[in-house]
Length: 320
Image (cartoon, rainbow, N blue to C red; front, side):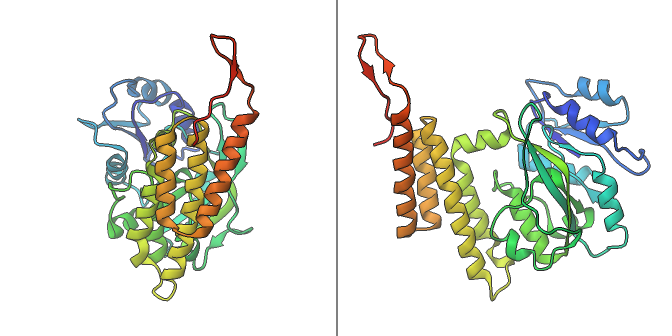
């Protein structure tokens, strides 16, 4: 299931990566669910690349990213559902490897593999941190996924009945609906892991993730995800897991803030700092913040001075 909206630049790669592993219409549904695109219509591209093999559905009006995710789940027909963004793609063996692994495991709620991260030109940047060296069930995975977002969407398939039992993605979480869903699944079902890197997540300036980061919403959204997920955690470990999760989010907040300050988005940067402090209001956070600000200022001072119209050299400092 491929949700789309106003971006076709990478869609052909997404489609061809799936079609190259297509076992046939009897076994795999392939569908693009467009969220009422107004700038770029993906249907002509879908028809050119896939003919009638890929179903194309268009929402009558734009409903938003998370509701469109849920629409993809609603329209899925198979036993397993795979949501694949229009800028991500799968690598050879993704479907066959997971199918073989799960053939005899009726108890598994979701299965995922290691991710490859690439840039806009498909240059390999890095691979995700391995969960284990061999394929299999991840025991007590709620302890890990409850602390930090460790799964990117193109790498995971979810049993269709699990979505039916647990409900859809939460629209109120615009940045972390997937993290909350993975926590929900891990709290109720075994999760299978494949250590091979079989799906690629593309990091580029035009992605929805980048847009949300610039808006400053990710940190507050992550904090809310921790709050709404707390009841899913083991009762005797909920406090400790939530505390570690807030610590992880506070570190992410400073990373986002650094990027915002370096790119002169002061209001966004301070908003991220505030949300990070709300996650971890401690002397340690303040110390880390001051160190980060000092590093940003130092980096700015190292930049070459620019010459003004009056011929004098000056440096631009955006931080107090």
